Every structure is written in C-alpha cells, then in structure tokens.
Amino acid sequence: MIALIDYGIGNLHSVLNALIAVGAQVSIGGSPQAILSADKLVLPGVGAFGDGIRGLQERGLVEVIRAMVERRVPLLGICLGMQLLFEGSDERGQHSGLGLLPGRVRRFQAPGFKVPHTGWNQLVLERGDRLLAEVPTGSFVYFNHSYYCDTHSPTEVIATTDYGTCFPSIVGRDVLYGVQFHPEKSQAVGMRILRNFVESG
Image (cartoon, rainbow, N blue to C red; front, side, top):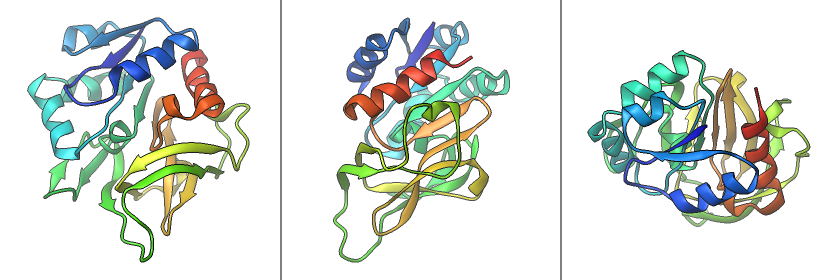
C-alpha cells in the first residue's frame, strides 16, 4: 500500500488518480499511524516551502518520514514534495527542510526568464535509474515552480533541465526520489515514471 501524504497543502486528488491509473493501491494518510503502515510513500505538494514544512510539523510527520526513509521505505517527492527533502529553503525567509538530501532551495534568477517556470520542458538524463525505465533523454514533462533545488551532491542528480539555470529535475539515492515536475500532468512520460516507482521493488 502506498501512503499519499496529506499535510494540508498539495494536489492530492490529481496525484491519487494518477497513481490509481497505473495500478497502485493508495491510501491518503495525514497521521503518523497511517504512514507507518505503508510500503511506499508519496509526498506531493504545491505552494510555499514554509507552509509545507509547517504542515508536516503540525501533524507530527517530520520524524516519521525520516524514520521511514531510514528503514528504506521508498519515498517519491513531487514538486514542493521534492524541495522539502532538502536541508532548507530561502523562500520567504529561511526554513529548514527534512534534511534527507544535501542542498538548499533557491529562487530562479536568470535574466530574461519569467518566474515561475511554467510549462513543458525537457529532461536530460545524467545517469540510468529504474525510475526512468523506458523514459528517453529529451522527454518533455510539465513544470510549475519558482524555486529549484541547489544540490550539494551531484551524484544524486538523475536528470537535469535548463531554464536559464541548469537545475536537478529528478534526484535519487537508494529508495529516495524527488521529481521537480508534475508527473500527474506530464501525460505518458509522467505516467511511466509513476508506474516505475509503483512497480519498483
């Protein structure tokens, strides 16, 4: 069973429908008990970093998520959910994240590029990974974000995307993954990535 983490912010139902469409058994969980019983976790999210981490803290989910990753329970963070995996963010002040991946979340600053980065853009695969089985480099996915993850560990970058700044669009280490785009809005490519996560061991 996959627990889709409900922390009061995010696009739960569109992600829920996409996971069901690729054959997943999914429950929406907003309590430690619901998450602790799951075989896999999905952390969705749209909105501000500070609101997101506050939502996790208020529900007692921060330490639970860390413990589940320590137990090697697979976790996929989507958009804001990916950003929350990192050490912190500069969005509207300084905020600490889950600290599962090294690096900080920063605002796009490239001259001539509108913020937010909204629309279709390409994945450039930096290394192979089971999450990207049958997903070729150059595939287009759908983005909607003003901040990107400035990682301190290039070996954890699976794919990058260019928007004036070359940023990690997919990161991963062991059973921990993050995607900056919205797979549930990315048509066949996004559904393939979700299916790969659902079907991975």
